[in-house]
Length: 355
Ligand code: PHE
Image (cartoon, rainbow, N blue to C red; front, side, top):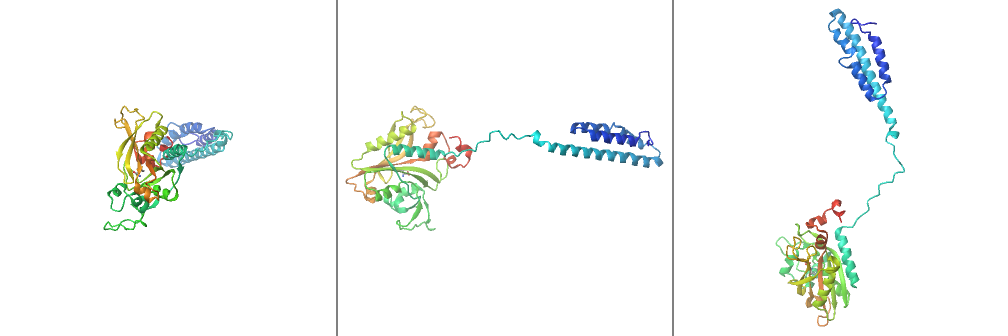
């Protein structure tokens, strides 16, 4: 049947449907869509001519042309769906999985820089014949302060910013019974007296562990680590302390290091000595790491106070000893060039993986 305007709609539709059904892929189908339904297509021209027909013929002609258009449109949709479904069936070939390809190895765990330094320290002191002991993190006031020559009310207590397990009353008064008051140890020194209570001299021990203080900024965090050292024997002097800590500084920071001792104050040592190591970055010439002094403070130490020996059941007339406390995070930061202490507590694995 020829339309009122000349195009054989039926024939046109039949041909279009055949070509659509034969379109080999999405691209060909799109090209065909422009040809068959585009503005310049025979069908579009036919539709635009319909408007020019006399009204009595316009209705019928419009109906026929629109029906042909809808049939063609739905044929396009069917073909597009068929092509898509066929494509999905080919996925196995198109995105083939090579089962012989080696797998991605699982990431292995990695020790934190604090653990690395701790292990290294334990190795150094084990090499010098020290025993390794551990003590409670939840500690009695007695061992944390009293037995370290820091009685209740002593101003040195303030420096330790202690977390008390049973906090002071609202009026600031604290349970006066130091035998039962409980706290999170603010240093590893309480183990000095605990260890002396259970071991007779000669004593050579290091105590690694976690310590707690109410503090939080770029140079202080509430949880950190220390390694306590204690040596008690007959005739121990500052020269022994010096030799031991110089050996440690060289093992840790390199054979060329020197140390120097500066007066300090701790109630549990007399004399108390701050230990500085010659800067391992500039070799003592002065740089930003050592604040242009050539020296870096690495630990606190001293000769064990006679009162502390007595608290530990050791006769100060017969024995002397030295003790030291090393801040592990500080050593790790110096060794690995980290400048914010808080990053030592950062759970971000990207940070840990750098070491
Ligand atoms: N306990 C001290 C501190 O935490 C360090 C120290 C240990 C000093 C042993 C002297 C002897 O600051």
